[in-house]
Amino acid sequence: MIRARTSFEPQIAMILGSGLGDLADAAEQSVKITATDIPNYPRSTVSGHRGCLIFGMLEERRVVFVQGRAHLYEGHSLQSVTFPIRLVHALGAERLLVTNAAGGIHPGIRPGTLMLISDHIDMVRSTPGFNTYDAPHPPHPLRPRHPSRRAHKYDPAWLECAEQIALRNGIRTQRGIYLWSQGPSYETRAEVNAFRRLGADAVGMSTVPEVEQAVSLGMQVLGISSITNPAAGLSKKQLSHDDVLRVGRALQGDIETLVRGVLSDLSD
Image (cartoon, rainbow, N blue to C red; front, side, top):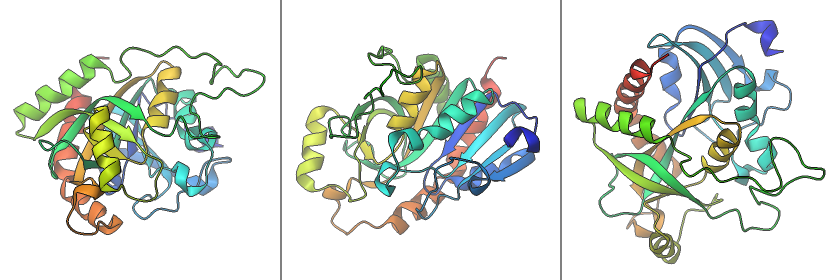
């Protein structure tokens, strides 16, 4: 169906998190395909996630934007949540740049910071029925029964490149470890304290299954978290999704500058 609409072959796939969807509007020569037109594509029900693919040029790179994502807590299976990754990879993308909005846990990673993800913690994997690495029967090539765990899921060279570009442009960044919790409830103070003891610097409800799928396909990954709020258990005020969207949009300029720099710096 997609090939009937465009012959565009992306080099890079970009997943846009809460409040960051407008970045795709900067693409040139763009072609937009809504999720409802793509068979088996998961539907997002969350505000700030539009649900479409946008193919276009950004900094002379061929990019497909995944504008809006589906979450496990919306009732989707892991196979469904990771379907867009398999799709963009089949279309030609060999790199994945994934963004999200997250709550800061580490005291040095405050709202307004862009956290470059150095690694992640999967708190959903041990939940019965939601194991990221559960293999179907018989084994499937995209979900092997005994998957190898690549030492660096987030490409070290790409991560260092992003840091240098942020430094040149005066953008506040920190490296950190992202923890995936299922949601949709925000965290309690006790949970946040436990997460910190595990080594987490920020917490969110997405990204990890997408990255795991991308890594299993051999894609290089860069992850960026927009720290939109203190993790819910640390905040004195009740957190709402509207607050997340508002701060995410305020970080849009820094995200765009950083992403454009990262794309322009890539070698062919």
